[in-house]
Image (cartoon, each protein chain N blue to C red):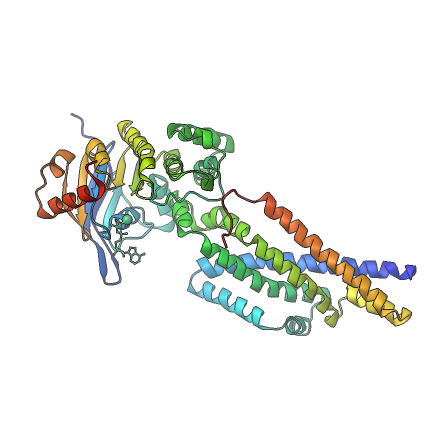
Length: 252
Length: 211
Ligand SMILES: Nc1ncnc2c1ncn2[C@@H]1O[C@H](COP(=O)(O)OP(=O)(O)OP(=O)(O)O)[C@@H](O)[C@H]1O
Ligand SMILES: [Mg+2]
């Protein structure tokens, strides 16, 4: 079988805030079309890892490759790199002053320098993909959390990224709104999009993830496909954590 | 009396010209100061904070005299600069407050799309900042438009000066000052009305200052 292309590779990533060592040597890689899910206790550095990968928060040490090319940090270069990595936020972070359509368009017009008309068509296409075309003219404050997050996904998709990173995309949502967001993520995964997802939705992880990464105290404790990591974990800490989240979030 | 109306009218025009000029100048400078203070490096940020502090601490008349006598400018230009920088200092602090009330996630989201910092400020932060601060700016206009009368002290022949000239001939101070008072009311109310239209035009559903 043909080896799939590597999209993202991270090696020995370190990040500290003062004396607080948040990331202590994280290495991972994602191949095209893979979905990797990161789980781990609160304060473990999951969000920090994602923001470091995007240099929204520059790492102290470590190397990152995108499509086999090492990222050399510079202000100009990094703006180009970020265009290729979608980011979906826990708090949605839609631009308050723009409609749903405007939110999806702004990256196309301002970053990719597309013509208004072309950008609008592309944005409508992406809104349709997440089932939000009917709300194109609405402002974020007029949308439910689930709808906002779907627009957030469309905004990331519109840039045709190599991968999309999700930081707990459903944890700010009421339970009845999680489904619409998770369904859209599942659809993306099935369509072959490359996803790196921090979540505690084990139902999603089990169904969609190629690999689950269990992270604790800035280190990767264990990594493996769902059937192994969930059903048959090796490390004691993984077992304890999985027990804890089943108690917290229920079976699925 | 009638033959003095053109003079009074000239005064009105000067007052309006001065008022608009210094206020718009102050608005632009205020934007720059606020953004410099929030997003600039240490040096720029400190400079902007210092600017805002100095120009809010000095009496308007002192600033006027400093510009007029210190730089040998025409009275009108000195008045525009002096009053403009003063309102810039105040406006900058409204803008800064507005920026700081905008969630940090807005900037993060913009940067994660690949926007440069400058583009993110112009396209994402400023439109929100301006909307949030418009009510305060309108209030600031109502307060500072009255300061145009201070320009009289450095020899700008605005409405008050024209009025005084008429009074020296006609000896009817009450009539003239009443007229002047009404004109000030119109200029103040007219300006705040225009600003309120702007506010309405740019209102975003669900996006306003919650008190
Ligand atoms: N900007 C910052 N300045 C200082 N400390 C920070 C900063 N951001 C995060 N931290 C610290 O880094 C640690 C890891 O935070 P991070 O948000 O990455 O954890 P997390 O795994 O995403 O947790 P959660 O599940 O609660 O989202 C925490 O101890 C946090 O207090
Ligand atoms: Mg987090």
